[in-house]
Amino acid sequence: MDLTALTECLLSAPCLVTQTMTGLVIAFLLFLAASGLTLVFGVLRVTNFAHGTFYMLGAYFTIAFYRANGSFLVAVIGATLLVAASGALFERTVISRVKDSNPLMILLGCYGVVLIADDLVKIFWGSAALSTGMPEAMQLPPVQLGGGVVPVYYLVLIGISATVGIASWLLINRSGFGRAVQAVAEVPKMAAALGINTRLYAAVVVAVGCGLAGLAGSLASPMRATMPGVGFSILIECFVVTVIGGMGSIFGALLAALFIGLTRSYGSIAMPLFTEGLTFVSMLIVLCVKPTGLFAVHERP
Image (cartoon, rainbow, N blue to C red):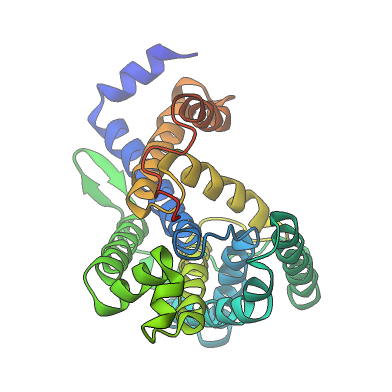
């Protein structure tokens, strides 16, 4: 453990700004992906074990659209919408048929989707790692911030993620759609009796959840290599976020993602060989202290 290097970084404005911004980028990407997972669980009480696959598809669709038209903005929007549509199809064909079964059936159904998606990706894009590269519009001089140097794309990514996060919160908590979703989540039978189309809302919720994962994959595609199977590692990271923050809590997912992102960023200085381990140690501590997570949504009766 190199506490000297960490202390020097904390006392150096350029290093402090750089590491903090790096941590925020990691955090907001994790938040986008994990909020989709926790949203689906919060409404349907179903753990989407194929969630990471939609992150992967978002990245691949972005690469395909970007190569086709050269506009990164169009590629991100198109990929996110296509992943959301795939999520709605996934809910209708898989989730709706197994959600009331035992957890093993849910796991097997989702795992089947993961295997199919990975094989299709290999057919269309091959097994080599791909990336969009940094979009031309983002190839601007870095921004000087507090003595540190911050890539423009970092600021764009954080801004988009924060905006989407706020919009998602307002949609769920301050709209008629959100109230209907909460009714479906808390008293599904009563909601159906009152005329709410629970099947439609379930499909929309899964579409939004998968779309958020796809958006995270899209935004990460210029910075991270995309390859078959990348969805599994993202799924593990999303589970860590939801376990720490609490299953079903978007606010908990945000706080957990911020904690993990900053821990990884500064942990890479103090404990470079154990950066990933710090995340899981934190998760184990939370599980020991509060097994349901810090802000878990209570199970409905």
